[in-house]
Amino acid sequence: MSRLKLHHSRFVRHVFVALGFAALLLGVIGIFLPIMPTTPFILLAAALFARGSERFHTWLLEHHITGPLIVDWYEHRSMRPAIKRWTYLLTFISFSTSILIVDPIALKLVLLVLALVLFYFLWRIPVRKV
Image (cartoon, rainbow, N blue to C red; front, top):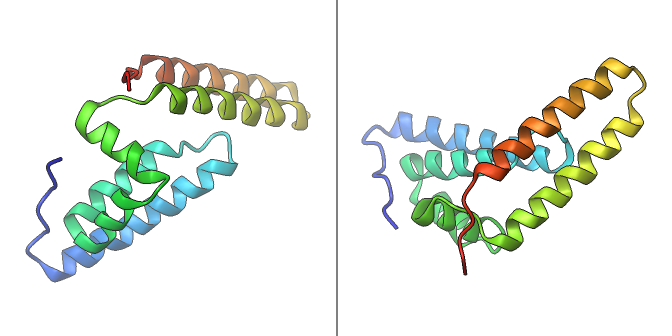
C-alpha cells in the first residue's frame, strides 16, 4: 500500500496531526450519531496522519478495527461484504431509533431522507470478495 510522504514543514505536520485527531474524533462521534458518517472521517484521519505523523498513521493502519477498513479502501476502493452488512444494519437501527424518538414530523422526514441518501451511497460502494 502506498503511503503519502510526510510534509517537509514541522509546523504543517503538527497541523495535519491536529486535523487528523479532529477527523478521528468526528468519526468516533459518528458511531453514536446517525447523521454523522464514521468511515469517511476515519479515512480522512488516515490521510492526514500520513502527511503529519508516520507513528499515528501506522497506529491507525495497525488498529484491529480501523486498519482492515482503511487498507481495503486504499488497496481495493471497496468494502468487505460483512462490513457492508454491518454498516447497513447499524445505519438502519440508528436512523430508526432517531425517527422514533423525534417528535415533529418534519424532523422524521428529514431523517428518513438522510437515511435513504446514505443507503444509496452505501449501495454504490463496491463489495470486495474475500
